[in-house]
Length: 430
Image (cartoon, rainbow, N blue to C red):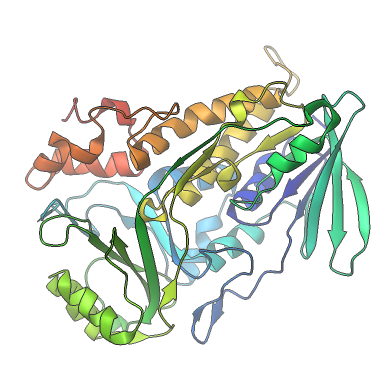
C-alpha cells in the first residue's frame, strides 16, 4: 500500500500507530493538539496538557511490552538509560491480594514502569523518517466522498488559527477518551443522525498519586509493591513502582464512600491503614517530589464501533478512543499497543502477494472489539453485551491458591498481564 496516513493524537496510541503504519504508507502525519514537555522536571516527571493521567506513573504490562517490541525496535533503550529497565512481574514484585502475598518466584513475565513523558519520548525518538509529527495542530473534522462511504482526509487548525484540509488514504483516531469521532461520524451525509452504542461500567473508585525520590542505597529489593483490596482494607488499595532517575510513583485508591487522601497527614494515615511495613519503611526513606495529584473519572467505557452500520472505509479508531478501562488495572498502554500491532498486521495483509486481501476498516473494528473483549471482562466482569460473566477471575480458586502455589501465582500474573485468555481461568488452574 502507498499513499498517506493521518493519525489524530500524538500520545501513546498515536505514536504507536505511527510506527504501525510506517511500513504500509509512503507518508504518515501525526497531528498532536498540544506540545510535548521535557521528560523530567524539578518536581517530578513532566505532565502534558490534555492528558488527564499524564502526571501519574504508568505501568506497561507484559503483553503491551511485547507489542511495543514488535512496533518500535529499541524503544526500551531510552527507559534503560534512565534506570527504568524491565522487571519480573512476580519475582521483582511484592503483591498482596486477598489478604496474603504471592510467592516471589521467577515468571519471565516482563513489565516496565516509568513516567508517561519518558514512554512517549522513547516512542517519538524512534519514529521512522517517513513519519512527521505536527505539534499544536488540532484536527477539527473529517471529509468523505460524495456517498460517505470512504473518508478522504481531515480538516486541521494550527496554533495560529489557520485552517487547512489534508488528503489521507487512512485516518486513525488515536485522540483518546476525549475523541469527537462519534460527533464527526454523525455529521457526515451518509451517517447523519446516526449514533454509536456505548457501554459504561462504573468502578466506584477514586485515586491520587504522588512522586517520590529514593536514594539507591535505601531502595528495596523489589520494583513493585501492590496491595489489592481485601482483609482489613476492603475498600483501599495501593501501588508503588520504581520509575526513572531514582524516582518512585505511588498510587492510592479508595472506593465507595471512602475518600483518597488530600494532604500530607491523611496521606500518611492512608498508608498506615494498609498495614504494610515494607511500604511504610520505603516511604519513610523517600523524599516527596510532587504534591498529591488527584484524578477524575475511573469508569470503564467502551464504544461499539464494530456495530456501526456502514462503517466508512479509510477510518479506524484505536486506544482510549474505543476502550477506556479503570486505570487501577494498568492496561491503558497495553490495549493501545495491542491495537496498533493489530492495525499493522491487518494493513500488511493488503500488501502484494499470494492471499492478500483488501484492507477493510469495518473488519478491523470488529477484530479490535474481539481483542478488547478479554480485558473488558477482566476489568468489569461483563461481556461485550453488558451481561455479567459467571466465574470471572475476580472471585475464583486462582486467588485462593496463588498465595501458596507458585504455578497459580504465575497464572494469576499472566492473566493480569493479558498473556493468558480470561476464559481459561479460574476453571483451568495449573
